[in-house]
Length: 143
Image 1 (tube, helix red, strand yellow):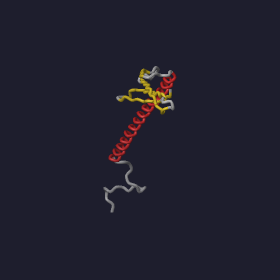
Image 2 (image 1 turned 45 degrees about the vertical axis):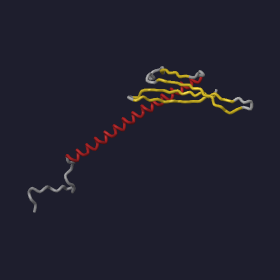
Image 3 (image 1 turned 90 degrees about the horizontal axis):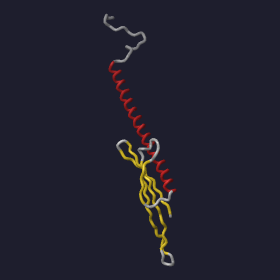
């Protein structure tokens, strides 16, 4: 017996089509949370790229300053300065030279053999947001 209020059967055999409001809200929340996480990952990636670019610039500047410094036969002491050029105003450098004598032992005539060693350090400093960063390059040279 059929009643008047009974739902009509769908000829395809499926229930009512569409999503409920709750299902839509859950799907939107999942998509929203996922997008927030992806945007955060993207920002972290950009920060890492900028930090890597600054470090690469500092390494190249330190190598160039070391080559220039060593070509001038530096004397013992310290020196500092700024780099010239576009986008380099954030970078500064310090250089220090210390000289050491290393004894090699006594000769047969009683005098001691010694070799002079020069220790040269070039450091590049820059500001990264609220942090001071630096990169140091060291070398030794026999005199």
